[in-house]
Image (cartoon, rainbow, N blue to C red; front, side, top):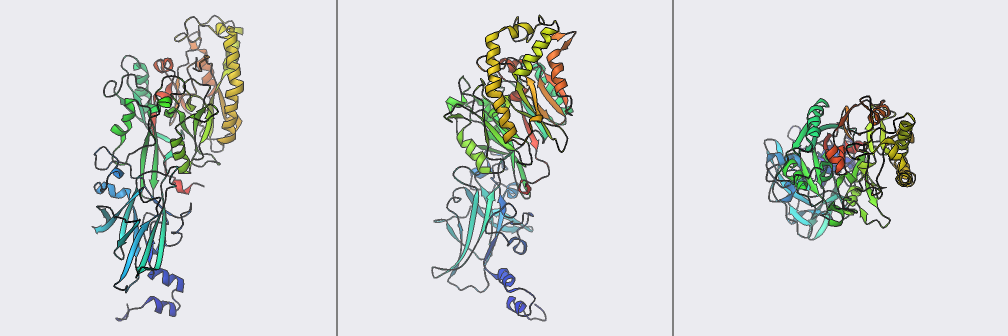
Length: 560
Protein backbone atom coordinates (compact mmCIF):
# COMPACT_ATOMS: atom_id res chain seq x y z
CA UNK A 1 0.00 0.00 0.00
CA UNK A 2 1.42 3.39 -1.01
CA UNK A 3 -0.32 6.74 -0.33
CA UNK A 4 -3.37 4.82 0.80
CA UNK A 5 -3.66 2.86 -2.45
CA UNK A 6 -3.47 -0.96 -2.35
CA UNK A 7 -1.21 -2.39 -5.04
CA UNK A 8 -2.74 -5.69 -6.13
CA UNK A 9 -0.99 -8.67 -7.64
CA UNK A 10 -2.70 -7.88 -10.92
CA UNK A 11 -1.29 -4.34 -10.88
CA UNK A 12 2.21 -5.70 -10.29
CA UNK A 13 1.81 -7.99 -13.26
CA UNK A 14 0.56 -5.09 -15.40
CA UNK A 15 3.57 -3.02 -14.41
CA UNK A 16 5.86 -5.89 -15.35
CA UNK A 17 7.27 -6.12 -11.81
CA UNK A 18 6.07 -9.69 -11.17
CA UNK A 19 5.70 -12.52 -13.66
CA UNK A 20 2.08 -13.70 -14.05
CA UNK A 21 2.86 -17.18 -12.75
CA UNK A 22 4.76 -15.86 -9.73
CA UNK A 23 1.97 -13.45 -8.88
CA UNK A 24 -0.62 -16.19 -9.17
CA UNK A 25 1.41 -18.52 -6.95
CA UNK A 26 1.67 -15.86 -4.25
CA UNK A 27 -2.09 -15.39 -4.04
CA UNK A 28 -3.45 -18.83 -5.00
CA UNK A 29 -4.59 -21.67 -2.79
CA UNK A 30 -1.44 -23.33 -1.44
CA UNK A 31 -0.13 -25.78 1.12
CA UNK A 32 3.57 -25.80 1.97
CA UNK A 33 5.97 -27.54 4.32
CA UNK A 34 9.73 -27.23 4.75
CA UNK A 35 10.43 -28.21 1.14
CA UNK A 36 13.89 -26.62 1.01
CA UNK A 37 14.88 -28.17 4.36
CA UNK A 38 16.08 -24.99 5.99
CA UNK A 39 14.02 -25.57 9.14
CA UNK A 40 11.51 -22.82 8.30
CA UNK A 41 8.16 -23.08 6.50
CA UNK A 42 7.70 -20.14 4.12
CA UNK A 43 5.51 -19.69 1.06
CA UNK A 44 8.21 -17.66 -0.68
CA UNK A 45 10.88 -20.37 -0.56
CA UNK A 46 9.00 -23.65 -0.17
CA UNK A 47 6.67 -23.63 -3.17
CA UNK A 48 8.97 -25.21 -5.73
CA UNK A 49 9.08 -29.00 -5.66
CA UNK A 50 6.56 -29.36 -2.86
CA UNK A 51 4.16 -31.63 -4.74
CA UNK A 52 6.58 -34.52 -5.33
CA UNK A 53 9.28 -35.47 -2.81
CA UNK A 54 12.76 -35.97 -4.18
CA UNK A 55 16.26 -36.42 -2.79
CA UNK A 56 16.97 -32.78 -3.61
CA UNK A 57 13.80 -31.19 -2.23
CA UNK A 58 10.93 -32.25 -0.05
CA UNK A 59 9.75 -31.88 3.53
CA UNK A 60 10.68 -34.47 6.17
CA UNK A 61 8.77 -35.53 9.29
CA UNK A 62 9.83 -37.62 12.26
CA UNK A 63 8.57 -40.85 13.67
CA UNK A 64 7.96 -39.20 17.04
CA UNK A 65 9.11 -42.18 19.07
CA UNK A 66 10.90 -40.48 21.97
CA UNK A 67 9.29 -39.82 25.36
CA UNK A 68 9.16 -36.13 26.20
CA UNK A 69 6.59 -36.42 28.99
CA UNK A 70 8.38 -39.22 30.85
CA UNK A 71 5.45 -41.64 30.92
CA UNK A 72 7.52 -44.57 29.67
CA UNK A 73 5.83 -44.71 26.28
CA UNK A 74 6.76 -43.13 22.93
CA UNK A 75 5.05 -39.80 22.36
CA UNK A 76 3.39 -41.04 19.21
CA UNK A 77 1.50 -43.66 21.21
CA UNK A 78 -1.05 -41.08 22.37
CA UNK A 79 -3.23 -38.33 20.89
CA UNK A 80 -1.50 -35.57 22.82
CA UNK A 81 1.23 -33.01 22.42
CA UNK A 82 3.51 -34.17 25.20
CA UNK A 83 4.68 -30.83 26.56
CA UNK A 84 6.79 -28.05 25.11
CA UNK A 85 9.73 -30.34 24.43
CA UNK A 86 7.56 -32.43 22.14
CA UNK A 87 6.93 -29.47 19.83
CA UNK A 88 10.39 -29.82 18.33
CA UNK A 89 9.58 -33.32 17.10
CA UNK A 90 6.81 -32.15 14.76
CA UNK A 91 7.07 -31.02 11.15
CA UNK A 92 4.99 -27.96 10.30
CA UNK A 93 2.64 -27.20 7.44
CA UNK A 94 1.03 -23.91 6.38
CA UNK A 95 -2.02 -23.38 4.20
CA UNK A 96 -3.18 -20.31 2.33
CA UNK A 97 -6.54 -19.52 0.77
CA UNK A 98 -7.38 -16.86 -1.83
CA UNK A 99 -8.90 -13.65 -0.56
CA UNK A 100 -12.60 -12.91 -0.96
CA UNK A 101 -13.94 -16.45 -0.69
CA UNK A 102 -17.66 -16.89 -1.13
CA UNK A 103 -19.58 -17.74 2.02
CA UNK A 104 -20.44 -21.19 0.72
CA UNK A 105 -16.81 -22.06 -0.07
CA UNK A 106 -15.01 -24.65 2.02
CA UNK A 107 -11.32 -25.37 2.51
CA UNK A 108 -10.64 -29.09 2.86
CA UNK A 109 -7.48 -30.84 4.04
CA UNK A 110 -6.96 -34.50 3.20
CA UNK A 111 -4.26 -37.08 3.77
CA UNK A 112 -3.55 -40.02 1.48
CA UNK A 113 -5.21 -43.28 2.45
CA UNK A 114 -1.97 -45.17 3.08
CA UNK A 115 -0.78 -42.56 5.57
CA UNK A 116 -4.06 -41.78 7.31
CA UNK A 117 -3.54 -44.26 10.15
CA UNK A 118 0.23 -43.80 10.25
CA UNK A 119 0.47 -40.07 10.95
CA UNK A 120 -1.20 -37.68 13.35
CA UNK A 121 -1.94 -34.03 12.56
CA UNK A 122 -2.53 -31.23 15.05
CA UNK A 123 -3.64 -27.65 14.50
CA UNK A 124 -1.14 -24.97 15.56
CA UNK A 125 -1.40 -21.54 17.15
CA UNK A 126 0.99 -18.69 17.80
CA UNK A 127 2.54 -18.54 21.27
CA UNK A 128 5.32 -16.06 22.01
CA UNK A 129 6.15 -15.79 18.34
CA UNK A 130 6.36 -19.54 17.78
CA UNK A 131 3.99 -22.02 16.23
CA UNK A 132 2.82 -24.55 18.78
CA UNK A 133 0.71 -27.64 18.10
CA UNK A 134 -2.24 -28.26 20.36
CA UNK A 135 -4.73 -31.08 20.76
CA UNK A 136 -6.79 -32.99 20.16
CA UNK A 137 -5.57 -33.99 16.70
CA UNK A 138 -7.49 -33.07 13.58
CA UNK A 139 -10.36 -35.47 12.93
CA UNK A 140 -10.57 -36.71 9.38
CA UNK A 141 -13.76 -38.21 8.00
CA UNK A 142 -13.09 -40.41 5.01
CA UNK A 143 -9.63 -38.88 4.92
CA UNK A 144 -10.85 -35.27 4.77
CA UNK A 145 -11.30 -32.44 7.28
CA UNK A 146 -12.79 -28.97 6.83
CA UNK A 147 -10.36 -26.30 8.02
CA UNK A 148 -10.22 -22.55 8.37
CA UNK A 149 -8.49 -20.51 5.68
CA UNK A 150 -4.82 -19.75 6.30
CA UNK A 151 -4.28 -22.43 8.91
CA UNK A 152 -1.19 -24.05 10.34
CA UNK A 153 -0.63 -27.68 11.26
CA UNK A 154 1.94 -29.93 12.87
CA UNK A 155 2.44 -33.54 11.83
CA UNK A 156 4.12 -36.56 13.41
CA UNK A 157 4.55 -40.11 12.16
CA UNK A 158 3.62 -43.10 14.29
CA UNK A 159 6.12 -45.42 12.62
CA UNK A 160 8.95 -45.75 10.17
CA UNK A 161 8.41 -46.88 6.60
CA UNK A 162 7.89 -50.61 6.23
CA UNK A 163 6.72 -53.24 3.75
CA UNK A 164 3.18 -51.85 3.84
CA UNK A 165 3.97 -48.14 3.69
CA UNK A 166 6.72 -46.30 1.85
CA UNK A 167 6.79 -43.41 4.32
CA UNK A 168 5.49 -40.86 1.81
CA UNK A 169 2.70 -38.62 3.09
CA UNK A 170 0.64 -36.55 0.67
CA UNK A 171 -1.45 -33.72 2.09
CA UNK A 172 -3.96 -32.18 -0.30
CA UNK A 173 -5.65 -28.82 0.12
CA UNK A 174 -8.87 -28.23 -1.84
CA UNK A 175 -11.18 -25.25 -2.35
CA UNK A 176 -14.70 -26.54 -2.75
CA UNK A 177 -17.85 -24.69 -3.62
CA UNK A 178 -21.23 -26.35 -4.08
CA UNK A 179 -19.51 -29.75 -3.99
CA UNK A 180 -17.27 -28.74 -6.87
CA UNK A 181 -13.52 -28.54 -6.37
CA UNK A 182 -12.47 -25.19 -7.80
CA UNK A 183 -8.78 -25.43 -6.92
CA UNK A 184 -6.40 -27.78 -5.18
CA UNK A 185 -2.77 -28.01 -4.13
CA UNK A 186 -0.66 -30.62 -2.43
CA UNK A 187 2.56 -31.16 -0.56
CA UNK A 188 4.41 -34.44 -0.24
CA UNK A 189 6.49 -35.27 2.82
CA UNK A 190 8.57 -38.26 3.83
CA UNK A 191 9.12 -39.82 7.23
CA UNK A 192 12.80 -39.71 8.12
CA UNK A 193 14.47 -43.13 7.94
CA UNK A 194 15.94 -45.13 10.79
CA UNK A 195 19.68 -45.18 10.13
CA UNK A 196 22.30 -47.46 11.66
CA UNK A 197 25.78 -46.18 12.49
CA UNK A 198 28.98 -48.04 11.66
CA UNK A 199 32.35 -48.25 13.39
CA UNK A 200 33.62 -45.14 11.62
CA UNK A 201 31.30 -42.98 13.73
CA UNK A 202 32.38 -41.68 17.13
CA UNK A 203 31.39 -43.85 20.07
CA UNK A 204 29.73 -41.95 22.90
CA UNK A 205 28.43 -44.65 25.26
CA UNK A 206 29.38 -48.32 25.60
CA UNK A 207 26.86 -50.62 27.27
CA UNK A 208 27.81 -53.82 29.10
CA UNK A 209 26.24 -55.98 31.82
CA UNK A 210 27.85 -56.88 35.10
CA UNK A 211 27.89 -60.51 36.21
CA UNK A 212 29.60 -60.34 39.63
CA UNK A 213 32.16 -63.06 40.12
CA UNK A 214 32.08 -64.05 36.45
CA UNK A 215 33.07 -61.05 34.29
CA UNK A 216 34.80 -58.81 36.84
CA UNK A 217 38.08 -58.59 34.91
CA UNK A 218 36.21 -57.80 31.69
CA UNK A 219 34.22 -55.02 33.32
CA UNK A 220 37.30 -53.64 35.10
CA UNK A 221 39.09 -53.30 31.76
CA UNK A 222 36.10 -51.55 30.21
CA UNK A 223 35.97 -49.14 33.15
CA UNK A 224 39.62 -48.32 32.59
CA UNK A 225 39.84 -48.12 28.82
CA UNK A 226 36.43 -46.94 27.57
CA UNK A 227 36.86 -43.47 29.18
CA UNK A 228 40.39 -43.32 27.76
CA UNK A 229 38.82 -43.89 24.35
CA UNK A 230 36.60 -40.84 24.87
CA UNK A 231 33.37 -42.66 25.65
CA UNK A 232 31.22 -43.32 28.69
CA UNK A 233 30.65 -46.80 30.10
CA UNK A 234 27.06 -47.63 31.01
CA UNK A 235 27.40 -50.67 33.29
CA UNK A 236 24.07 -52.42 33.80
CA UNK A 237 24.09 -53.93 37.28
CA UNK A 238 23.75 -57.65 37.74
CA UNK A 239 20.63 -59.06 39.32
CA UNK A 240 17.02 -57.91 39.12
CA UNK A 241 15.13 -56.95 37.09
CA UNK A 242 17.07 -59.01 34.53
CA UNK A 243 18.29 -62.58 34.68
CA UNK A 244 21.88 -62.71 35.90
CA UNK A 245 22.99 -64.70 32.86
CA UNK A 246 21.55 -62.21 30.36
CA UNK A 247 24.76 -60.52 29.30
CA UNK A 248 24.48 -60.24 25.52
CA UNK A 249 24.03 -56.50 25.04
CA UNK A 250 24.73 -56.57 21.30
CA UNK A 251 21.89 -58.99 20.79
CA UNK A 252 19.20 -57.16 22.71
CA UNK A 253 19.12 -53.89 20.74
CA UNK A 254 20.45 -51.93 17.79
CA UNK A 255 20.99 -48.19 18.24
CA UNK A 256 20.58 -45.94 15.22
CA UNK A 257 19.12 -42.49 14.74
CA UNK A 258 16.58 -40.45 12.81
CA UNK A 259 16.65 -36.82 11.73
CA UNK A 260 14.74 -34.03 10.05
CA UNK A 261 15.93 -30.42 9.66
CA UNK A 262 16.25 -29.00 13.17
CA UNK A 263 15.68 -32.27 15.06
CA UNK A 264 17.82 -35.38 15.50
CA UNK A 265 17.44 -38.22 17.97
CA UNK A 266 19.03 -41.61 18.58
CA UNK A 267 16.49 -44.42 18.19
CA UNK A 268 16.98 -47.88 19.64
CA UNK A 269 15.43 -50.86 17.88
CA UNK A 270 14.50 -53.57 20.37
CA UNK A 271 15.22 -57.20 19.53
CA UNK A 272 12.58 -59.91 19.84
CA UNK A 273 14.23 -62.65 21.90
CA UNK A 274 11.84 -63.27 24.76
CA UNK A 275 14.52 -62.29 27.30
CA UNK A 276 13.95 -59.97 30.23
CA UNK A 277 16.92 -57.75 29.35
CA UNK A 278 15.28 -56.95 26.03
CA UNK A 279 13.18 -54.53 28.09
CA UNK A 280 16.30 -52.53 28.98
CA UNK A 281 16.11 -50.38 25.85
CA UNK A 282 12.62 -49.15 26.64
CA UNK A 283 13.02 -48.98 30.41
CA UNK A 284 16.38 -47.20 30.45
CA UNK A 285 17.04 -45.55 27.08
CA UNK A 286 13.64 -44.30 25.93
CA UNK A 287 13.33 -40.69 27.06
CA UNK A 288 13.37 -37.10 25.88
CA UNK A 289 15.21 -37.01 22.54
CA UNK A 290 15.97 -40.75 22.68
CA UNK A 291 13.53 -42.83 20.67
CA UNK A 292 12.53 -46.47 20.96
CA UNK A 293 11.00 -48.72 18.33
CA UNK A 294 10.06 -52.34 17.84
CA UNK A 295 9.25 -54.29 14.70
CA UNK A 296 7.53 -57.67 14.73
CA UNK A 297 7.37 -59.93 17.76
CA UNK A 298 9.05 -62.88 19.40
CA UNK A 299 9.51 -65.96 17.21
CA UNK A 300 10.58 -68.81 19.54
CA UNK A 301 12.12 -70.93 16.80
CA UNK A 302 14.42 -68.05 15.87
CA UNK A 303 14.78 -66.16 19.14
CA UNK A 304 14.80 -68.39 22.20
CA UNK A 305 18.54 -69.13 21.99
CA UNK A 306 18.47 -72.89 22.52
CA UNK A 307 20.15 -74.57 19.57
CA UNK A 308 19.51 -74.83 15.87
CA UNK A 309 18.51 -71.50 14.34
CA UNK A 310 17.12 -70.08 17.57
CA UNK A 311 19.70 -67.25 17.79
CA UNK A 312 19.11 -65.89 14.30
CA UNK A 313 16.74 -63.08 15.40
CA UNK A 314 19.33 -61.71 17.84
CA UNK A 315 20.92 -58.47 16.76
CA UNK A 316 24.47 -59.75 16.52
CA UNK A 317 22.90 -60.89 13.26
CA UNK A 318 22.21 -57.33 12.07
CA UNK A 319 25.17 -55.09 11.28
CA UNK A 320 26.13 -52.11 9.14
CA UNK A 321 29.06 -51.64 6.79
CA UNK A 322 30.54 -48.13 6.88
CA UNK A 323 30.11 -45.61 4.06
CA UNK A 324 31.76 -46.23 0.73
CA UNK A 325 31.36 -44.57 -2.65
CA UNK A 326 28.75 -47.18 -3.52
CA UNK A 327 26.93 -46.85 -0.19
CA UNK A 328 27.36 -43.30 1.13
CA UNK A 329 25.50 -44.07 4.37
CA UNK A 330 26.74 -47.64 4.63
CA UNK A 331 24.85 -50.84 3.90
CA UNK A 332 23.08 -53.07 6.39
CA UNK A 333 23.73 -56.80 6.31
CA UNK A 334 22.27 -59.77 8.14
CA UNK A 335 22.53 -63.55 8.29
CA UNK A 336 20.52 -66.33 6.77
CA UNK A 337 20.82 -70.10 7.14
CA UNK A 338 19.44 -72.69 4.75
CA UNK A 339 18.16 -72.53 1.22
CA UNK A 340 14.46 -72.08 1.98
CA UNK A 341 14.91 -68.53 3.30
CA UNK A 342 12.88 -69.24 6.44
CA UNK A 343 15.85 -69.29 8.82
CA UNK A 344 16.94 -65.67 8.67
CA UNK A 345 16.67 -62.45 10.61
CA UNK A 346 12.96 -61.68 11.02
CA UNK A 347 11.65 -60.81 7.51
CA UNK A 348 9.58 -57.99 9.01
CA UNK A 349 12.75 -56.32 10.25
CA UNK A 350 14.49 -56.93 6.94
CA UNK A 351 11.50 -55.39 5.12
CA UNK A 352 11.58 -52.35 7.42
CA UNK A 353 15.29 -51.89 6.70
CA UNK A 354 14.67 -52.18 2.98
CA UNK A 355 11.88 -49.59 3.20
CA UNK A 356 14.25 -47.02 4.75
CA UNK A 357 16.01 -46.94 1.41
CA UNK A 358 19.19 -45.17 2.46
CA UNK A 359 21.18 -48.25 3.59
CA UNK A 360 19.38 -50.77 1.44
CA UNK A 361 18.88 -53.25 0.02
CA UNK A 362 20.19 -55.13 3.04
CA UNK A 363 22.69 -57.82 2.18
CA UNK A 364 21.98 -61.43 3.17
CA UNK A 365 25.06 -63.43 4.18
CA UNK A 366 25.52 -67.12 4.91
CA UNK A 367 25.73 -67.81 8.65
CA UNK A 368 24.47 -71.39 8.48
CA UNK A 369 27.90 -72.83 9.25
CA UNK A 370 28.15 -71.06 12.62
CA UNK A 371 26.63 -72.37 15.83
CA UNK A 372 25.16 -69.01 16.88
CA UNK A 373 24.64 -67.83 13.28
CA UNK A 374 25.47 -64.14 13.61
CA UNK A 375 27.18 -61.93 11.05
CA UNK A 376 29.25 -60.19 13.74
CA UNK A 377 31.17 -63.46 14.10
CA UNK A 378 32.61 -63.14 10.62
CA UNK A 379 32.89 -59.44 9.71
CA UNK A 380 34.31 -56.41 11.53
CA UNK A 381 35.10 -53.09 9.83
CA UNK A 382 37.95 -51.08 11.35
CA UNK A 383 38.71 -47.51 10.16
CA UNK A 384 42.23 -46.82 8.94
CA UNK A 385 42.09 -43.03 9.04
CA UNK A 386 43.21 -42.93 5.39
CA UNK A 387 40.77 -41.15 3.10
CA UNK A 388 41.39 -43.20 -0.04
CA UNK A 389 41.81 -46.51 1.81
CA UNK A 390 39.39 -46.06 4.69
CA UNK A 391 38.79 -49.53 6.17
CA UNK A 392 40.21 -52.89 7.00
CA UNK A 393 37.79 -55.78 7.32
CA UNK A 394 38.56 -58.44 9.89
CA UNK A 395 37.44 -61.89 8.68
CA UNK A 396 38.04 -65.34 10.18
CA UNK A 397 40.70 -67.52 8.59
CA UNK A 398 41.20 -71.21 9.26
CA UNK A 399 44.08 -71.16 6.79
CA UNK A 400 45.88 -68.55 8.87
CA UNK A 401 45.43 -70.61 12.03
CA UNK A 402 46.74 -73.79 10.43
CA UNK A 403 49.77 -71.99 9.02
CA UNK A 404 50.52 -70.45 12.42
CA UNK A 405 50.24 -73.80 14.20
CA UNK A 406 52.46 -75.47 11.61
CA UNK A 407 55.05 -72.74 12.14
CA UNK A 408 54.96 -73.20 15.88
CA UNK A 409 55.48 -76.95 15.53
CA UNK A 410 58.37 -76.43 13.11
CA UNK A 411 59.92 -74.05 15.64
CA UNK A 412 59.89 -76.79 18.27
CA UNK A 413 56.85 -75.43 20.10
CA UNK A 414 54.49 -78.30 19.35
CA UNK A 415 54.18 -79.27 23.01
CA UNK A 416 53.25 -75.76 24.19
CA UNK A 417 49.69 -75.63 25.58
CA UNK A 418 47.16 -73.97 23.28
CA UNK A 419 43.78 -72.61 24.45
CA UNK A 420 44.62 -73.90 27.90
CA UNK A 421 41.68 -72.11 29.55
CA UNK A 422 39.15 -73.79 27.29
CA UNK A 423 40.69 -76.97 25.86
CA UNK A 424 42.45 -78.96 28.57
CA UNK A 425 45.51 -80.82 27.31
CA UNK A 426 45.52 -79.23 23.85
CA UNK A 427 48.87 -78.26 22.32
CA UNK A 428 49.80 -76.68 19.03
CA UNK A 429 50.71 -80.13 17.71
CA UNK A 430 47.55 -81.84 18.91
CA UNK A 431 45.39 -79.22 17.20
CA UNK A 432 46.90 -80.27 13.88
CA UNK A 433 46.92 -83.96 14.74
CA UNK A 434 43.11 -84.20 14.68
CA UNK A 435 42.82 -84.95 10.97
CA UNK A 436 39.04 -85.07 10.87
CA UNK A 437 38.71 -81.68 12.58
CA UNK A 438 41.34 -80.20 10.29
CA UNK A 439 39.52 -81.49 7.23
CA UNK A 440 36.26 -80.05 8.54
CA UNK A 441 37.89 -76.64 9.06
CA UNK A 442 39.54 -76.67 5.65
CA UNK A 443 36.17 -77.40 4.11
CA UNK A 444 34.64 -74.46 6.03
CA UNK A 445 37.35 -72.20 4.67
CA UNK A 446 36.90 -73.38 1.11
CA UNK A 447 33.11 -73.61 0.93
CA UNK A 448 31.81 -71.03 3.39
CA UNK A 449 34.40 -68.50 4.58
CA UNK A 450 35.97 -67.85 1.18
CA UNK A 451 32.49 -67.55 -0.33
CA UNK A 452 31.48 -64.98 2.29
CA UNK A 453 34.68 -63.04 1.71
CA UNK A 454 33.83 -62.85 -1.98
CA UNK A 455 30.40 -61.47 -1.08
CA UNK A 456 31.98 -58.82 1.15
CA UNK A 457 34.22 -57.66 -1.67
CA UNK A 458 31.48 -57.75 -4.29
CA UNK A 459 28.69 -56.18 -2.25
CA UNK A 460 30.09 -53.92 0.47
CA UNK A 461 32.38 -51.69 -1.53
CA UNK A 462 35.80 -52.85 -0.29
CA UNK A 463 38.73 -54.37 -2.12
CA UNK A 464 40.09 -57.82 -1.44
CA UNK A 465 43.29 -56.21 -0.15
CA UNK A 466 41.24 -54.66 2.67
CA UNK A 467 40.53 -58.10 4.18
CA UNK A 468 42.56 -59.00 7.28
CA UNK A 469 42.60 -62.77 7.77
CA UNK A 470 42.40 -63.34 11.52
CA UNK A 471 43.31 -66.85 12.75
CA UNK A 472 40.24 -68.95 13.60
CA UNK A 473 39.33 -72.58 14.17
CA UNK A 474 35.96 -74.26 14.69
CA UNK A 475 34.46 -77.27 16.35
CA UNK A 476 32.21 -79.50 14.30
CA UNK A 477 29.09 -77.82 15.71
CA UNK A 478 30.23 -74.43 14.40
CA UNK A 479 31.46 -72.88 17.63
CA UNK A 480 34.75 -71.02 17.59
CA UNK A 481 37.52 -72.84 19.42
CA UNK A 482 39.84 -69.84 19.35
CA UNK A 483 38.39 -66.72 20.99
CA UNK A 484 36.95 -64.95 17.98
CA UNK A 485 39.00 -61.80 17.41
CA UNK A 486 36.75 -60.79 14.51
CA UNK A 487 34.07 -60.28 17.15
CA UNK A 488 35.71 -57.08 18.37
CA UNK A 489 34.61 -53.59 19.40
CA UNK A 490 35.77 -50.31 17.83
CA UNK A 491 35.44 -47.24 20.04
CA UNK A 492 37.13 -44.17 18.57
CA UNK A 493 40.89 -44.66 18.86
CA UNK A 494 40.67 -48.08 20.54
CA UNK A 495 40.05 -51.60 19.26
CA UNK A 496 38.88 -54.01 21.97
CA UNK A 497 39.64 -57.68 21.19
CA UNK A 498 39.26 -60.99 23.02
CA UNK A 499 42.39 -62.31 24.69
CA UNK A 500 43.21 -65.21 22.34
CA UNK A 501 44.73 -67.65 24.86
CA UNK A 502 47.39 -68.79 22.42
CA UNK A 503 50.63 -70.62 23.21
CA UNK A 504 52.80 -68.71 25.67
CA UNK A 505 56.55 -68.75 25.07
CA UNK A 506 58.90 -66.71 27.25
CA UNK A 507 55.94 -64.88 28.72
CA UNK A 508 54.47 -63.81 25.38
CA UNK A 509 51.24 -65.07 23.82
CA UNK A 510 52.32 -66.00 20.29
CA UNK A 511 48.81 -65.77 18.86
CA UNK A 512 48.28 -62.34 20.38
CA UNK A 513 51.63 -61.19 19.03
CA UNK A 514 50.69 -62.40 15.56
CA UNK A 515 47.37 -60.55 15.62
CA UNK A 516 49.09 -57.38 16.81
CA UNK A 517 51.41 -57.65 13.82
CA UNK A 518 48.44 -58.19 11.48
CA UNK A 519 46.81 -55.04 12.82
CA UNK A 520 49.96 -52.97 13.19
CA UNK A 521 49.06 -50.57 10.38
CA UNK A 522 45.76 -49.66 12.01
CA UNK A 523 45.83 -46.48 14.10
CA UNK A 524 43.79 -47.77 17.04
CA UNK A 525 45.22 -48.82 20.37
CA UNK A 526 44.69 -52.56 20.78
CA UNK A 527 43.25 -53.66 24.11
CA UNK A 528 42.79 -57.39 24.76
CA UNK A 529 39.99 -58.21 27.17
CA UNK A 530 39.53 -61.26 29.38
CA UNK A 531 36.21 -62.37 27.91
CA UNK A 532 36.38 -66.01 29.00
CA UNK A 533 32.81 -65.98 30.34
CA UNK A 534 31.52 -64.94 26.95
CA UNK A 535 33.74 -67.28 24.95
CA UNK A 536 32.63 -70.23 27.07
CA UNK A 537 29.07 -69.22 26.18
CA UNK A 538 29.90 -68.94 22.47
CA UNK A 539 30.32 -65.20 22.16
CA UNK A 540 33.04 -62.58 22.51
CA UNK A 541 33.67 -58.86 23.00
CA UNK A 542 31.28 -57.47 20.41
CA UNK A 543 28.49 -59.80 21.54
CA UNK A 544 28.91 -58.55 25.11
CA UNK A 545 28.69 -54.84 24.34
CA UNK A 546 26.66 -52.23 22.50
CA UNK A 547 27.54 -48.69 21.47
CA UNK A 548 25.73 -45.39 21.07
CA UNK A 549 27.45 -43.50 18.25
CA UNK A 550 27.34 -39.91 17.01
CA UNK A 551 26.17 -39.49 13.39
CA UNK A 552 28.38 -36.42 12.91
CA UNK A 553 27.44 -33.21 11.10
CA UNK A 554 26.44 -34.67 7.72
CA UNK A 555 22.74 -34.92 6.86
CA UNK A 556 21.34 -38.12 5.43
CA UNK A 557 19.37 -36.24 2.79
CA UNK A 558 22.60 -34.77 1.41
CA UNK A 559 24.17 -38.18 0.79
CA UNK A 560 24.94 -38.71 -2.89
